[in-house]
Length: 483
Image (cartoon, rainbow, N blue to C red; front, side, top):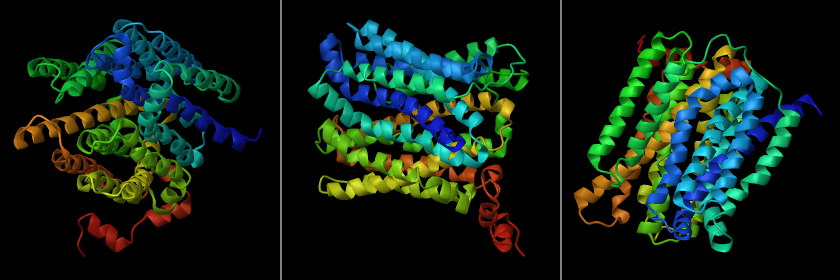
């Protein structure tokens, strides 16, 4: 086997595992009513199956980097797949709400290790010259999973049984374990310090409570005072962690990484971009089903084109970034992606289905390019010995962005209900909310604009760097100098 083949295979193996994890959550969301009926549970209570998984992620993701350094990324990644698979089997065998929730927690522990450790494996095994293409593979699960989930979940639940949602993970995991053992090298950094237990006890509960709070906001499931108390307590713990992290020698999540301009742009700018676009998978099915009267299966088929666009862009992202440079791509493409995020505000019952599908296809192209650019640039200048902490930090921010995006969308819909009156959501409630989330996404340009024209130089060939540099007059004007 050639070295080139191995380099291409490693990101694909990791992406397959991450796809399994991403698909699982979105498939489950579509099938909750059927699961609730089978387990004799309240469908609203069954939301616990989703939130407890998220909480497990929030608690254990911060420890993933240290574990990868201590026990080896390959070993931790394999163990994570085993734990995730064991949780999947337990979910499929669940007989009541309690056993399903417990099984989802077990799944979450495995999932918390898979995403950051899988990314760490790619960062440590793939040369920087090939990094853009490798990261492109890793963006596919996050883009395609939420798109394929609704139609696949509806199909499995309708024609088979909801338990197969979890059992189909097992053969994927078995093949993945074989490929990991055979092709992925054992990469790790020498651990020079002890585990940051104090930081773990602050950031784990802090993230879980904060995520719980922002997830409950705008849903009306819990009293507002309780939601505020949970969110505020989580925020206080996170504030205490910030003070701890800035004073500890080796914190579990190193906030000082934000001093690196490319990492700061990738994480903070990426957070804003994902926050806006992360509301789409929540808003679109709700609009198509509640306002336009589509079935869950029809709704899923409408958004499927986004994943198709994402898959195609995977083959073109590296060429585009190398030609125009990270700064140009991130700034202009953030605007384009945000415009596509706002377009559903113009949809109505009379909008042709083919036009909607075509717009989602183009939006998927733009979104995939942005995710690839952000995820790659973030690690361009991170020293090898800090990669484990950097990946944990970045994944935590990604989890937060999704929750915050859904919260903003839910609060926006609740506000529209309040101002327009009535108790049922209709098509007129959605346009301002889609515009709101697009504004959040486009605000990421403020961080991308601060990048140097040659940002990510270590990942780009010389000719790309020259193309990325603006003419001298343009550069002087952009810096505020007038000749």
